[in-house]
Length: 87
Picture: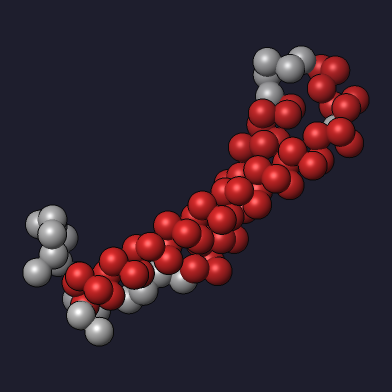
């Protein structure tokens, strides 16, 4: 029995989330967020001149989001296995 009721009834059996896929999506989201922060509208036209200095910040943000999303997927799989699926 799920903890929260759902109005959507899927015909497919629930499956674990893919941790590597979640990490890839997280890295993409982190890179986009860091690029927007680096080259966003608040930084003006001179932000592109210092793009090389910001590459480390973009890589760190991508790695952090990748770890965050992979951790969330792994936690979801752990909770689902131990509380819902009882495998």
